[in-house]
Length: 351
Image 1 (tube, helix red, strand yellow):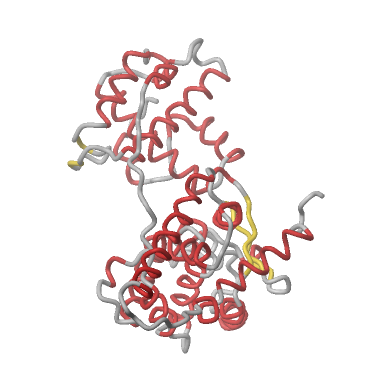
Image 2 (tube, rainbow, N blue to C red):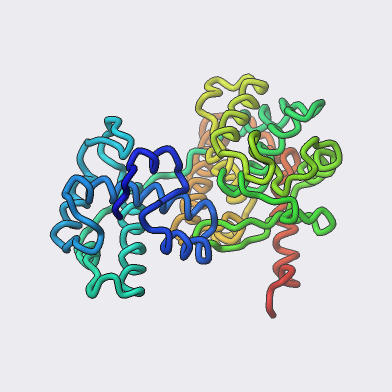
């Protein structure tokens, strides 16, 4: 992966100058977001190979075993800044990107053996993390506090509803195109992790706001729902969306607005699905989980909350009040529509 101008590579996140054929391969096989992540991960590999005075084809299994070991220790980023040890999740992703790159080199006969086979002997276990949704009162305050009187407010409110009412990831929202929105069917279609496509029903609140925004938006020439401020032909950077949801949190006067993220909204969506009686399979399909074990965490969390509520209601001497979250937020309607669509199969599905 030789590069005569190594500094340039860090100034252009989507550019790996030394492996353009591989970059073209990613264009065909991966989504733009996945390709960007692969590029970031391969810069970490390039940093290691440069320090060892190696090119990719020269790396041996023992070199890549040492590379994996360095990820678990503090060091510097490819840009030269100090960094802590990579998390287990980041390590897994970097090693997966490295393995994909070397498999490509083997497929085009740049190398005769794949040195990343050594990764199979590594046991990297991620700690189990339960979803961290917003409490019901904060969910209610967030939705009630949305402001839609101007374009900025509409954009912020849309991001909140796409995260909370559809359970979309921040990258899925950032890369959503106008053509992915079907107002007639009331569906949004996204390409998620692993380039898996899924369609999620909209709530009425989201549908009405999208109708209004699409009519009133100023960048009507852009193909993305939220275009980059610098180029309407490119998607907005996810960082802007995270700033927007924090602004919505200040509107709602949440206790810690800086802690609200799109992923917290996604966790809130999954939790409320479970609280509304969704099966683990429905949660998996609506949220685009690659493993049903991830979906089970939401069901377990909802069960724990249900036991706690039961104990508080019947053992603590409190008066019981019915709390119909679905009526307020509309997520129960998403579940009902999804079940209806599943019975007659989603558009484009093969019976």
